[in-house]
Image (tube, rainbow, N blue to C red; front, side):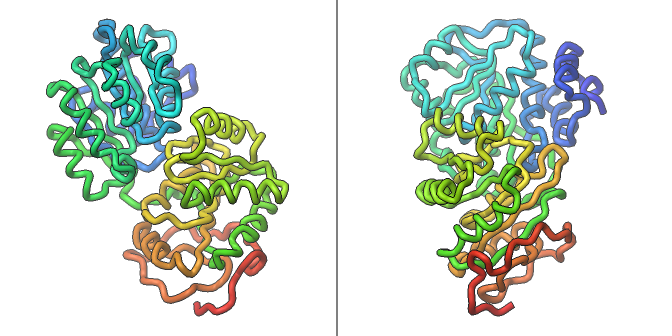
Length: 408
């Protein structure tokens, strides 16, 4: 179906066409008709499948239809996102979709000065994109009101749960009108999502275009067993094979990310980092430099990288395996975007065997080993491997740290 056949206003369809957006993605095709009919929607889709347009376009369509200006300090629609980067990306997309219209889009996130945000909200806003913590700061200062909010979106709801934002949501919910439309979008649906659904949605339509744990088809996964202290040398070995291509490296902690970045700079790589100890300005500058090719390697933590949309990322390295197995799917989803292919290599130290088992159980496939040998027996995945069997470019199996005592 086309966007016009989905029921969007011709003016909105024209704006999309000007931006080269002509065909809706599966999540857009399924979610938009229900949203236009006023239904609450629970959407499940992988990262990079067009969820922002799936919830953003129906809200814009309906706000254009009313022609009503927002009241002072009020927000007609509210989109909550767990991280600054994701919120910024959403606001940029919404501004592109509303180009040439009277609709006002505002972004409020932590790490930026409060006063300019308060001033921008004074006259009201049509769509407010916010992180929960900063929104509560503004609510406490009576700089924004939610009693006129007709549309609520919770994006990357699983990550909100992981980051403990459920308490913030419980504070925000009573301030919203009971009569509203709510949409919840997520890449995974953990059990705790039932609480969110019951508390915020009314008889929602569930749309799902990929099951939890589903890895993008064009991501070639690989696994390298390596001792912890030899990971940096192994990473340098891999990165040296594609110095001109963009690579994203994931670390478990803020301090670990910064240490990896500094080691890569010493090795001659143009590297940057984004994590919770960086200011919003520092993170934005690093991402801009990475997108522009000034930096070839970006080291990130899970929280800081959530919502990154950089189509040219060809390689993802899991320097540390994530404690939450679903985060593995999010991490490697940063490559193979917009129809491109990508490679994802995971490093596994002896202490990370538990994380590896959980990841393989979640994705339902054994990740192909291209270096070293297993530190111990691995459980069979929950379903037989049927994924892409292509081998990525092989790093030296022991160069940089293959290890010694290993049984296949």
